[in-house]
Length: 167
Image 1 (cartoon, helix red, strand yellow):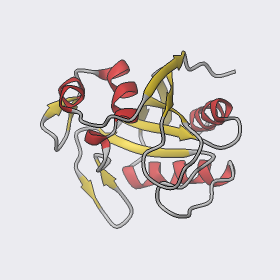
Image 2 (spheres, one colour):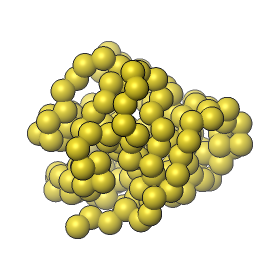
Image 3 (tube, one colour):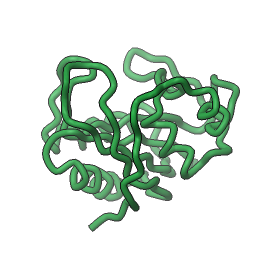
Image 4 (cartoon, rainbow, N blue to C red):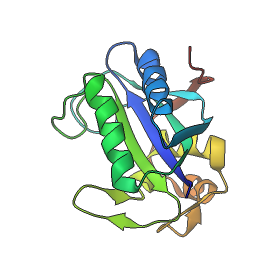
């Protein structure tokens, strides 16, 4: 059965824009994942961690026949293949792929929490998500993406850069 999932993309090392495009291209070549819609690219101020370069972020809606932990494993495989190393939380990264939502499921395992626990508080996630699905109800939050945006107190800067196009 095909389920809808929303994937957050982020990069603040190297050619950030190309990193996001490369990750999307790799994701689109995985069996059981169908890329549907992508937000624009956003230029975003880092949240937490040490001083670091600004990020490029985007959100993709995908259809998938993979289970949540299978999808996570595929995303982590893309990250590893692109040179991501796991270190301190909020550290700079070449690519970061997060499952934000997976259908209407609430998932809490040792490997995965969905909805993403910081989704309701992060402007750099909510703005691109609102662009492609503002009326989507976020499981667990009991609110649509647009309602979460109205309640948002995150003052970090987020600028729409332009369309997300694979080259």
